Amino acid sequence: MSEYILEMRNISKSFAGVHALKDVTIRCRPGQVYGLVGENGAGKSTLMKILAGAYLADAGEIIYKGERREQMSAGEIIDSGISIIYQELALVPQLSVAENIFLGREPQRALGILDLKSLHERAAKLTERLGISMDTRTPVSELTVAQRQLVEIAKALSQNADLIVMDEPSAILAGSELDQLFRIIESLVEHGVTIIYISHRLDEVFRIADEVTVLKDGELVDTRPIEQLDRPMLVELMVGRPLDEIFPQTEHEQGDLVLIAENISTDTILENASLELYAGEILGIAGMVGSGRTELARALFGADPLTSGTISLAGAKGDSWNNPAQAIESGLALVPEDRKSHGLFTSLSVRVNLTLPILSRLTRFGILQSQAEDEIVEEAKDRLSIVMASADQEAQYLSGGNQQKVVLAKWLETNPAVVILDEPTRGVDVGAKFEIYKLMRQLNDRGIAIVMISSELPEVIGMSDRILVMNDGRIVGEVPQVEATEAGIIELATMADAVANAS
Ligand SMILES: Nc1ncnc2c1ncn2[C@@H]1O[C@H](COP(=O)(O)OP(=O)(O)OP(=O)(O)O)[C@@H](O)[C@H]1O
Ligand SMILES: [Mg+2]
Image 1 (cartoon, helix red, strand yellow):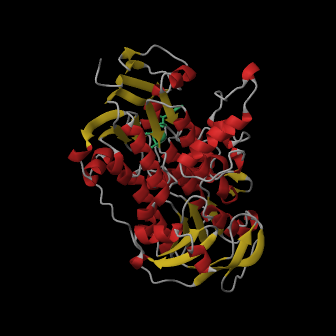
Image 2 (spheres, helix red, strand yellow; image 1 turned 135 degrees about the horizontal axis):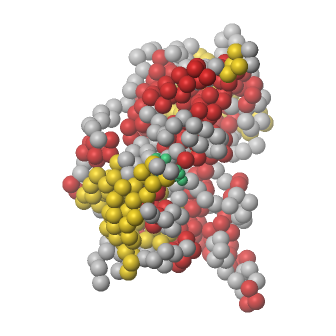
Image 3 (cartoon, helix red, strand yellow; image 1 turned 30 degrees about the horizontal axis):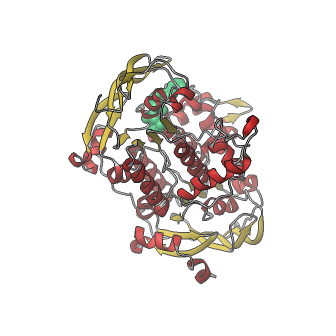
């Protein structure tokens, strides 16, 4: 028998004239971790969707467990031992956590009656293994994006696969959650399971991968053992040129106070949060899944009603707001973490998405100034290197990272005083990340204040002038950039008595 569990040979795939993959070959041995990296739109997800049976390749063959795979349904492919955690989460919002994990494979009693007790027991075991406390009866619609991601991982584990593909599984996990994920991967690998791990967080790839495959513009660049690579080399293979990974800093002194939140609580986990925000700074918000980061962003934006406390602009304007429309009117913008449901109109064109918030500015006497519109689209495309077939392409057909850039660009056009960014670089490739960082600093230089929520600690530390750490719904500490370390932040974010000490 072959030493490989999987060979994908000479795979090609086009979408309406776009070559997503050209003659790509990868080979995987049992019990190994394979990193799959490349810029946004490089073809990583497409390759894995072909493996999962979601797309059919135009050319090439798949040899799995020593046999050439004939055309199979996605269900048959799962049964053959391949599981995928998709980048765009694929859960059914109306169903519970447990129902999602076992969808289509629910335990049944005699006569085909659903065995609910066993369903929840088995689901609880899996979530426990992932180190998450979650009622398995909760509908998925009530979970945060991060929690949904963990449910996806639990689902893949429940399928007892021999080969697990993780497409950006860690995009919103931080610190101890990542450790937990890596522990699980290690134990799977010890049992001979093969992992294909797609991530834009290259530190993670170096931490767990045995071999790394780089794709660029749909073509294979190289596959190398991890020992033969360092970070700058890998970045160069991905981007096609050397890239200085230096976080841009602002040139300015701290500006005037622009926003004050005092003792704000909402009906969510958020309790008694107070913060001050100054012109031209980046205030980072760090914390684990469920610590209340997103809830803080929503409260600041007026998206969740306050049950106590106040938020207002400082200085002469002194505005306060009770809903997002008023918040926008006062000069706030929020780029939410769940771009699928809040950030992007996936069935509309990139052009429409980019210009929607400023439509009134582009319209003169009721007539849309299409030249001005074109300029905005061109500028956003260049500034953020958005890869698209044309500005009229529907947003849903952009790669994940390019969708994120469109969402960001759209809000930046509104000229806000305060921008709240929830995971702004989630799923964004390394080159584009630095473009986004530069853009954030340009906003700072114009006096705009930024609140940035991020799970990626190097990014929080590299970009924030000050960092607030959240734990269990409260702000438990403030760390200036010069004193910030990953270990220090994780300690504050996970310490059980940090919450008690803070109050
Ligand atoms: N269903 C589709 N229809 C048209 N084009 C598509 C479709 N799916 C993918 N593409 C295109 O194929 C190319 C590869 O996309 P893919 O999603 O595989 O990239 P990726 O490497 O996963 O990127 P990212 O890091 O952003 O997730 C992109 O140019 C994308 O726009
Ligand atoms: Mg992808």
